[in-house]
Structures are given as C-alpha cells and as structure tokens.
Length: 287
Image 1 (cartoon, one colour):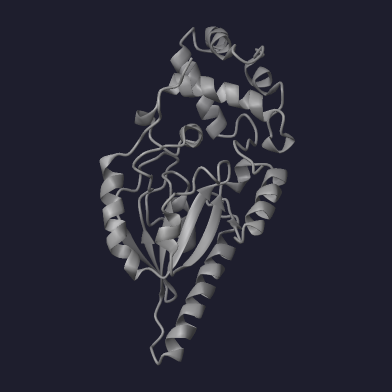
Image 2 (cartoon, rainbow, N blue to C red):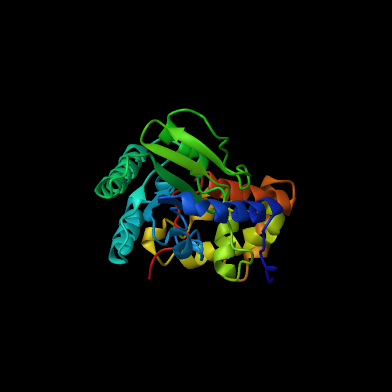
C-alpha cells in the first residue's frame, strides 16, 4: 500500500513566517530546538539563512525518549559536524539550566562587543525556533520558571509571535513552529507525522501507522534504535510476520484490541510510540 504524500502548511504558520522575517533583524541569538527522536528531520532547510550573522544554540529536546547509546552517537556526530548540542528534557526541566547559562554567556559576548564600540549593555534578544511540537513552549516555561506560554504535546499550539522578558539578561521571542511550505523529503515527513510534529490534517493515520510498522522492522538491525524484533508482539501479543504483512498485522491486532476498528488501533499504536509506551525509540540515526 502506497502512503499518499504528507503535506501540512496551515495558514497560521505561513503568517508566522512572514512575521518572523520582519523580526529576525532584531535578534542576536537563535535557540533552535529539535526532537531527539528525529534530529535531522526537524532541521529547517532555511535555518542557515535565519542564523546568518547571529549566535546559534542547538538544543536537542526529548532526550528522555531515546536511549543513552543513541544520545551518545548523535552527540558525537553533531560535534564532528562542528556543532555543540545542548541536550534537555524540557518537560522535566533536565538540562534547561545549562541552556540558560549558555544563552546568558552569549549575551555577555554580545555586550563585550557593544562596550568595545562605546555602546551600553542591553539584554540579548533570543529567538526560539523549531518545527511544531518539538517542545519550544515547554522550554520557554522552564527558562522563565513559570507558565508564560501554552504548552501541549501537539502541533500548532503557539500561533503568534510574542516577546517575553527574562530578567535583565534576556528578551525571548517565542515563535510558532515553522515548516517549509512543501515537504519534499517524504521519509522525513513520515517521521514528522509519527512524532506528532505536524498536524493530523496532513496525513492518513492508518497509512502512517502501517508505514511505522514497516519502519520498525527496518530499525531492528540497528541496536541503538531501541527497536527489538519482538517489540510489537510484546506490547500487543501478535508478531509481525515479515515485510509486506503490516496491514494483515494491523487488522489482526485491531480485532483483538479495538473490536476490529483498524483506524482506532492505528491511532493507539502512534499514541503508544509518542508516549514512549513502546520504549525508547530513535527513528533516525546518523550513518
């Protein structure tokens, strides 16, 4: 079964990107947030254009949803690429203090340059940037130490840009999740759908669930992915018997767990992955 093209670019994102372009000139620091399960798929193709001439903090959120081995592999890979990733679990607050210190340090460097030109100190203007539902709002609430923006594990919660004062050191610009107008890389689009980083209006839940089952079979070969050969059997009691049998498996499992409702079973499968009920799974790893 072929999965139809996954595309999602709602009006509020298009509007937010226009507002973002107008505010980029005011920003000194870009705090880019990615999803630890899919750190490549949550890299925006326009990122280099947006961070040009600015300091850049790469934040990998949801470190709690991948294995320590996968984190180590990704950390080494990013450092080899010349990046210094900052890992966190924004929901629990793990790693947020270090991110705040890094942002303050970036502000110190900014003000050193300002003083050398005879200018006064001012707060660093930081922008949080990333795909929808990668945890930007949860990170901001942790950085500010109070709930200043709505946070939920679904795409499209933040819809407008707003400045947030963080003491005397940082002014933070909270922006809605941004997506390219067209998702040309459909493998990446599938991963975005699986991680709930795009809205459900952009894909068919049942077909994405079938693609997920097939993907799990491919990930078994990589130990760091966290996928074992009996993962689905352990959770649902029925084994997937080889590639090409994903639909038959879904029908059989639906008969056992959701009275034959394959769509409801597909949604349950995706929700179980998103809540880590299937374990700590990395959907992509560097080659």
